[in-house]
Image 1 (cartoon, rainbow, N blue to C red):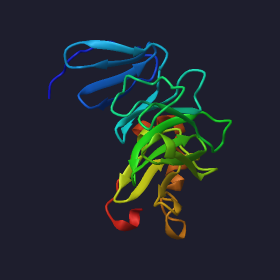
Image 2: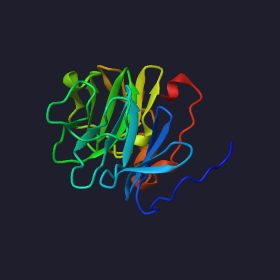
Image 3: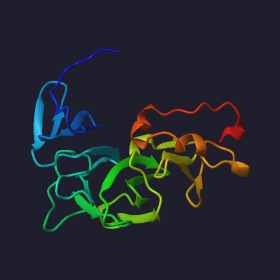
Image 4: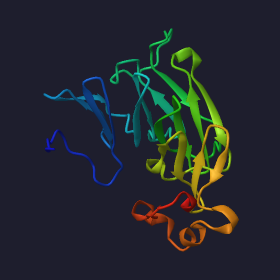
Amino acid sequence: NFTIIIGTVNTQVRTAASSLGDLFYWASADGLKHWDTTSVSVDSPALNFDSLVTHKGRLWGSGVAGDKRTIYISKYLNGSDWQLKTDPNEEDPARIQVQGALDENLTGLFASYKDLLVWFKANSFGGIYGSRRSNFLSVSFSQNVGSAYPETARDCDGELRFLGSQRAAWGYQGANLTKLTKGANGSGIDSLMATVIQGDAVNRSWPQTTQNDW
């Protein structure tokens, strides 16, 4: 491992990054940029995403100031083109305003789970189906469970697990949503989670040594 400094970022805001093809993209308070291993180029000074992922040959971003309920989708195989077209084709950029607690902003994106792009709000989450501009479809999986910590989302052997609201960890298997921290017969780590302040979620851990721990 080695370190290469390619640019500076604002340490007071969340910086999002992802790669597409041979380019490394990142977004901060001063917009979206990319690095081609030689030089840095500015793609848009206005696209200050706080979440950026690569999914099905495109970059997907959320958290743009003034439009935090919309997912922005780049052109296919071109993370520098986000401009909507008057007469778009299947490869052109797109934007999707997702459902599920519409009065809440998107907290982040996860790519991918069962070939879906997963989006999170604080109290709802869902996914986007499709691989072409004309068949993108957003579906809400829950209207009352979401996550303010989308960086905790993981695909664990076919189950999407994430730290959600009310100090609970959740598991989603494509049909059933389970509160993992509840456990069987009142066991689990609910009592422990209830005593920890939500703001320290990045430092929270729980050892698992047996199947029953879940």
